Image 1 (cartoon, one colour):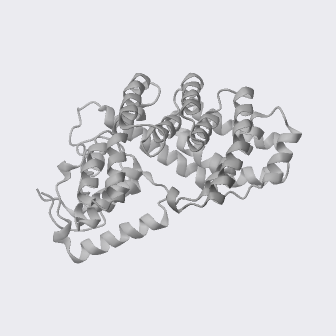
Image 2 (tube, helix red, strand yellow):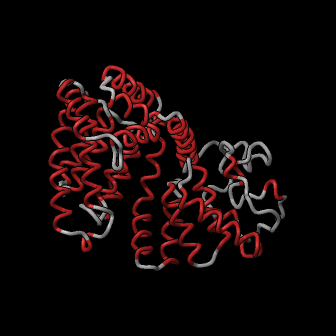
Image 3 (tube, one colour):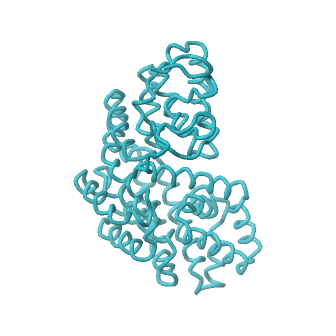
Length: 372
């Protein structure tokens, strides 16, 4: 099957509704396609929030002690999410850009806000998220065996400060989804699965469209933390009852395979890792699965597959982080030099034939060559 350079998309041809048309124009959206469509919309909305500088504006309002405007701006972001779950990734980018790990917000400023406005759910939520971010920062991202007792002690101190602030925020406004995202994370890091489960249940009651609460809880259920593969699968199945609230809950069924892929990846067994990531991606495009599938393919010198996965990463990771962009550019350079090495079968990708909106990231940067 030969395609022109304009339509060479390495497996994403079906989404090119403009230039190439849909492979299945009359097919109704599958559950997977619905999840991907919402993910794509979420990425676009997140990018818009970032380009508008929403988080930076909140920091300025905090520093100016303009609490009325600050809380009104936060409430607008929250209202966007309550109207449309596609705004959740943008919501997360704003709130964590404001007070998450690496923020420019400072503890004295946040404490002054809570003191001045003790009945503001936003003030306590922001301080709680700040403390959680500091806990993650002092703990670091290394394996537990490479983390010092002092780091763990500092982490525990910050987590102990975060919990009461998050609990206060939940009491003041039970519908604030970020309070549940962070309470699940704090509970996981404190080794308290019961508390994480309670937070998840409250999220389902008060913010049932929150995909991030579900994925945070799924992480807590992983064998790396507090649960098992069986618990992860059972949770994924239970969330199918909420698909009318958020189509991305369909993706939860791929988390066990992705977790197994992560284990194989850490063991440098790239062949097995790629098999697991492909199985996970059958349920939807989670960007980290796409990225590590691409890395697993690269490690095996399967540049065609690697390019296909990284192009799909670019579809959702907006703006694309510099590290990933460099990898994509490197794959493209290799493919231009050795185009035959980039021959691949688009039908192997789970999104093949999936209708959906076109994105510039779908256009292959490699001209010529054949697709099987």
